[in-house]
Image (cartoon, rainbow, N blue to C red):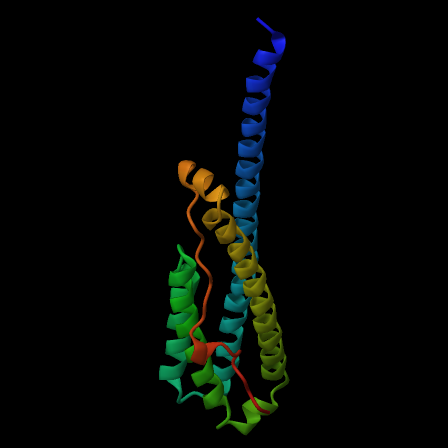
Length: 186
């Protein structure tokens, strides 16, 4: 038997194996990018969660009659901190937290001494900075999700994605009316 007859099927088999390995490895790499970028979002959210108790304590010192608003912020923060799982479930908790922070800043408008407090102003600036960082981390995460989902959905990688049980990742989306960071005019 001619060795070229065996060499052609071996070359085809090697080529198929090489394509499968490259596509599989790219899916793994993209999935890991999605996980890493979600970790970045999570880090920034935790940074915000750490700022909120200080902000609540500062407001509490001036706005003693606003117990309900302060409790709402504390409860929303607690739910957001303990919200784990999909980006969709996290987004629900984040929307609630952002809404309660808006209420807190609305209350702050009624207390001129609070608005002039250096501690409050520093916390407010830090929170605005953190909101910007969260937005950047969300954009990075969603970009990685888009790349991964494209690979999972597009031929021929979609075949391997389904064979190896790669599932589409969820985007981290905030409701349209709550996309903006809490805004405070001083």
